[in-house]
Image (cartoon, rainbow, N blue to C red; front, top):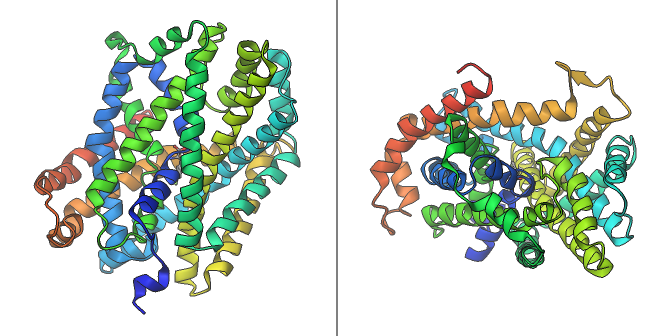
Length: 454
Ligand code: PFF
């Protein structure tokens, strides 16, 4: 049996797209993109975001794809294989570490979405704005409840992971992603039918170039990297399960288009409702766990059945987006451990799941229960978020570009992206140029800016 068959592969083209898109489409699409867009000039921002995805996102994604597919192994070993004993291999290890850290806090927030599914089912999401704030604050700082939900979410992730690539990740994505698209479309429809919905659409889509500043470009680039799951080992790990026939360039474009499309639809789903009831939208956990339940109450309160269905559909959608992203993060560590320690997939997955629960519990307790669990004045939860998004992600992207642009033999790159000469790729030289100079310079600039150095 060939090595790639032993590790498993995605079985179909659709499976590749849905699983990889499932990893990319996550909470970031829903709670951050719409808000950042509204704040930064609507369609003007979306235009800049498109450019960032096209000029930076797709090339860096392609770099990760070709490293993973070439090596057909976990992210750390994939970089090591191409690094030929040089320190470039550490970039791969950093990807694995980043994924392991992200899952710590991402898993906690994902668990919160499950609690809100239950709260929607049992009809608990009613009250005044202060009630919603109190409900969220009490729940998220409770030392026990969020840990139980996070453990349940890790359990669901574990269940998918132990079934392997084709029967686990691919099958789950083929069920969950169409459901996610369907729920999204239904919710966009409900939102657009609200009175005054067009104000929300205008806030999101009306181009206002006066709001575009240098910071807008940085926001767009940072958001595009997080949203596309770049530099976290996920894309490289999934690409190691792509077959030789998979067209890497086409796949990178398709994933980027789906991810961006979902983000824009999320904006159309979220913005009309607050605008129609005169509530100011915001971003992050407070948007989805405080503002939106209040908005559902105000917008649909006179039609209890509609409010029930909208609220339930919204939190199921969020849980699916979160779950598929958690699966991609879990797979990075599972494939790493099972291949590096030469232990079975089930054993490795069990170890990773336990680690997720321990790190997640620590993050969750740092918000309530163990208030002393802080470093540099930040609860561990915030620290993990800050460190991964602002340090690991830009550094990982930066070194990945330099590695491919300056170190890896161009023949390998050419072979991978043209599928050994069987498909044309006219922009090969442009791709190498962008990866060598443009991407690293831009990423370095964002990195220094985030640290307040430029
Ligand atoms: N791309 C996901 C989102 O937009 O929410 C977040 C994410 C998933 C980041 C997986 C990193 C990752 F490895």
